[in-house]
Image (cartoon, rainbow, N blue to C red):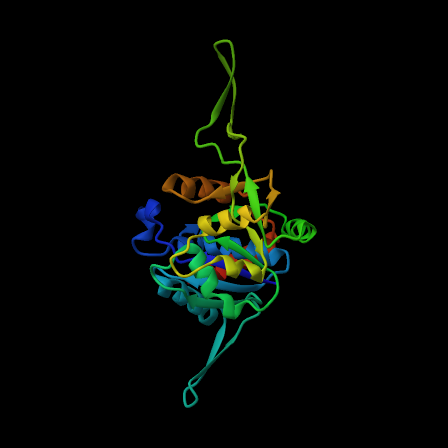
Length: 268
């Protein structure tokens, strides 16, 4: 199965960072959040990525190009215009970077990727949020439901810490969410039939999901674990603090491998 990642948005609410780079390239630790998301999927064995580019897509292309060429020994065949990289540190991923237009809406970007996805199920997510969603369990749930798409339902994270009080005394602080409603957390599984619900470049994902729901073709996989979008600078600061503390919940991959790859990516 391939993994679609939408990485073409403007990221205007994180303008402190996105004036010079696209939102998926904003770093957590010394790595773009896009890398963190891809590591999550790769942990479950899904290593074929189709990334929808738009705003500052050339930045993402350059980052992957630099990673591929700076992470090991390089041989140039000047007459043939070929470059060979020899490095045991390179991740065994296939990454297709597809320009889906600067002003294309979210669902329109997905439809533009149709030629690259084949005829089977595919994952889809956004390039600006991390989670501990168990992708194997989600896929099994999706197949049991028999719908065209499965959305991950999550609880919205608390924007402020909660005080636990007893009379006039503070007993403890907690970051548990106060709102127990469900919202769209991204991390979808989709079937090719979803493309029939997308008209053109101007169709956004919310509209598409509403159409699927009206036809009873949208299932909800409930995720009670960690989920955190990076919508604003405070979210980036929070995710940075989790990563720097060594307690990032979404880091499910091997620690030794992470450190090795961090050294490589940190040079890019």
